[in-house]
Amino acid sequence: MTAIMIPAWIDGEMQPVEKLDAHVRGLRHKAVSVFLMAGGSLLIQRRALGKYHTPGLWANTCCTHPEWNEPDADCAVRRLAEELGITNVHVEHRGQVEYRADVGNGLTEHEVVEIFVVETDADVMIRQNPDEVMEIRWITLDDLHAEIAATPEIFTPWLRIYMAKYSKLIFGSET
Image (tube, rainbow, N blue to C red; front, top):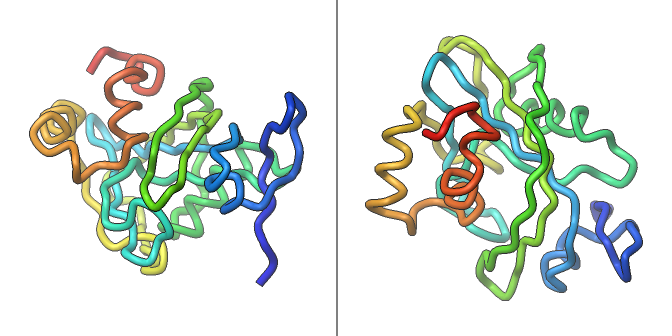
């Protein structure tokens, strides 16, 4: 299997870097996060236990790293299909955020993230990829905030950061 090369900054210049190497070295790198909304609810996923970091933790609908020279919106659409089998959706770009977080096992996410939101119906067809996702569920934003406050350890660091610092950008409100 060929190593996935992602865009990362080294000495101020964006270069292709192997994905795992970017996390081992804590390099600042590009990422994409998608939030699938139906009414007032967000689809969240519990990461598969085979993931190399943060296995079994709850995260936003999907997230990934664009491959070298892959447009961000194309990456968001690709990853929705790969992780959840969701196709034929329009992704709306909501902005860019940056965060740095320890994700365990000596790995660091230092991401410059393009945020995308998809508005859909709750009956959207979902086919989970078991190599990526072990569980999904719909949750209101208020309930998600409450669960993160009560049990932060079951959520990925980035979802906790998104909900605490970037709710207005992502969801258009302070919730």
